[in-house]
Image (tube, rainbow, N blue to C red; front, top):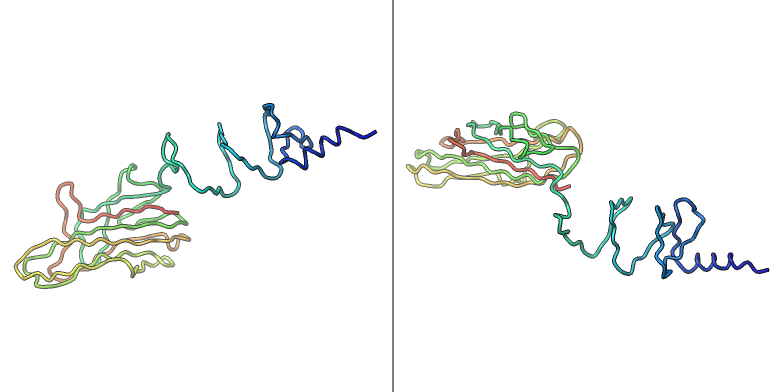
Amino acid sequence: MFNKKLLIACTCITAYVPLCLANDANMCVDIKGKKCKTFNSVNICNYLNVGGNLTVGGTGTFGGAVTASSFSTPTMGLLFNGLRNWAVFSNQEAVGNGGTVLFADASSANTAGITNTAGSITLPVGGIFLVMYTVRFSIAAATASGLALAQLQQTVGGTPTDISFAVINTFDETAAGTAISSQVSGYALITTTSTSNNVINLIIGLDTGFTLPLATGTDANAQITILQMN
């Protein structure tokens, strides 16, 4: 006698994506059936195509990548809740020629995963970081011309090394007898791979007549912002 149950099982397997019940891996479920079926746990044996909307009431965990033509921002907040690590440090101390901008410790609201010790800023390993800095110099009235620079450095094998593609210089070509302030802003992408290259600092170079003076009040003479991109 022909086995009708075997015929039904074979039809289900060949016509539809196989779903396996957690308590019975050999049981095939017809997902195109008109009746609603509820299971405590379902494993997808092969692949699943959803022609309409998919609603997940709980947490979705994916072992691989998620590909979509677009992502919509949910009403409860941003798709990504904040940055991984970031920091904003400011400086008020005077800095002489060849000195490191000391950068004071920031509050916990201004830092996450990035630390600063007397201007030596330690980044997490590994990652890609956008570093933005601003330095404001004072130029004495007696200065006819000269140069000041703010040079971003990254350790290479533990040794501070200049990053050559950052904007670093301010140049005074005003007439003698005019005291002014000049501001330099620089930007760089920093990649860290180990503890031998994850420290950055900002050093100052000054010609005669240029200074990075002590700031007054709540103002700052230099600031650095770091955002982890990856």
